Length: 273
Image (cartoon, rainbow, N blue to C red; front, side, top):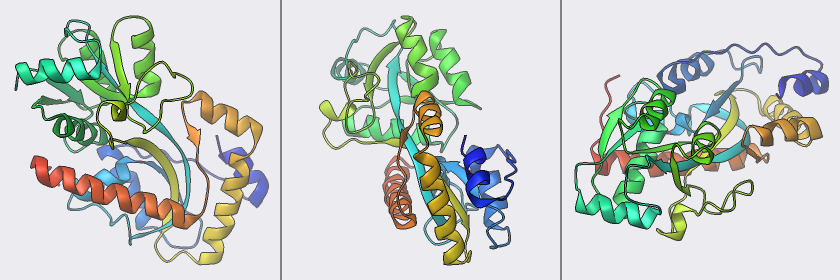
């Protein structure tokens, strides 16, 4: 969505090279090892911060890159299968305490951002849930609709249609404030103050990229985010636009990394790699 405007503002063609796998780790390492000349940049999600604490091979998110800009963020949606006798987050937590170790939740894999977000939710609520890792979050969502698992903390865009259709029950969004497009859904923080997890998307370049190049890319990206068509498309994809300075994005990554490191340590999560 940003490419046409970045091309226009910078007078350079941008080639999108999707490198999926390992929660974004494959693309991250390719970008991190590229020449720091401004010709290779990456757009990555909040999984960048989780990879840093669960994979030994992950690139250092705080010192190993040159942050450019945070593009936007969205909430996760806490949802359950209708077979669970709960219609609010408080009711679900009470039921989970009564059935300790019996309720399951699905994620996009061990160490994924959905895994850590759910572990943080469980520890905050003082409950024990059983993790069922899948190869992709979409599979976990499909299996929950089918009744094989009880809960997911899933991306808003693919999860919400199932809630609206009655196939799932939406309990809460994970952002600190209610999401403007769905204000009827409460936040986790309304039950557990202080819980705040956002799925962000941002752009960075390899470490050592000259500051002048970083600032030029930052200015172009911020200008693109103000374009009405770009803004409409991003909001249609469920994002709230962020923008801002490279320093603001760097601070976001630093705080997320510290938070997930604590979750991984306390939950004893280990991933080979």
